[in-house]
Image 1 (cartoon, helix red, strand yellow):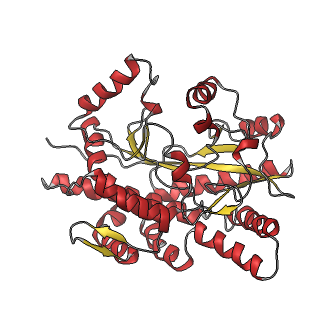
Image 2 (cartoon, rainbow, N blue to C red):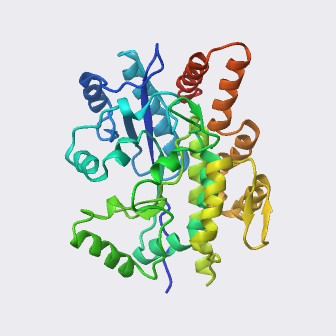
Image 3 (cartoon, rainbow, N blue to C red):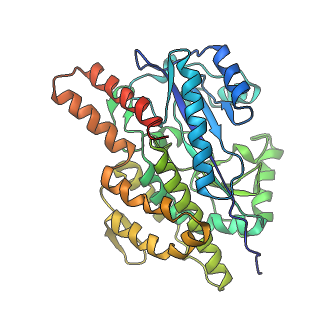
Length: 378
């Protein structure tokens, strides 16, 4: 069945951790006055998250990635300015280098209280932040069809975003430890395969009917049809410390969906692979980020990640031009040159240790770098 061209509008949500500027530790009980100031200055675009030490911001519906970037730049600057009045700062990192989850307090809201009660210790460990990208796809069945095809590219997007190498003061050896924490929840990971939107709804309705979930917003897959908007929501990525990285990854995801629409328009589609295979690349992205390559299932061999992405960028050139995001897409090569936030955090830590810093001092230097870089060049 033909599908009219989607709007491909875009919206981006980012979650930040709030830290004490002097100690670098998480602000487990941030002042109520600060949260009220957020609401007054940036009403409806900033929200408390599950833990009080977290804050979420989100753009409006944007026509292109450039517009979303400008909104996020303003949001980051405003959050940093208001938090600074209380000697706090936001950091765009998916885990904190040393503060422990055991000392954090969850936000007193009905939804979060229910989550804490249902998930117990698993929920209490959710000291993690992510980035979610919504792309406007108006057709219900096409949204579900995109779950089946776009899942292939989720590990690529994760690898470019990694920002969570540390957990409770230890270098985990993973570039995205966040995913290890998040995967302890039910209804996470790669989405299942559905032949239609109606089939997807039937599965959701079973869980709602028996009282397991109140609605589809409790499906925390790496990619999902948004329960609130006519969008396909990508959720696998870490939050990026550098905002230009955020824009590049959002643009890449947007272009992938448009490329899949082009294929459909020509009565073609991306070849499907079992979750068993895609999960191997998901793990490689989580463990190695950009460093050790991924499996090209068509070729049946391990391929260096830059080579895979270069092939993909060439395939998406037409889409980047139509969507007006060529500048953002071009930044992906810069991510290869500088590394992701995870690479840079580890470098800051090792450099500090190399000049005689203690463990605590080295980890604090990572937080200082995160504070500075979160609002750099805005």
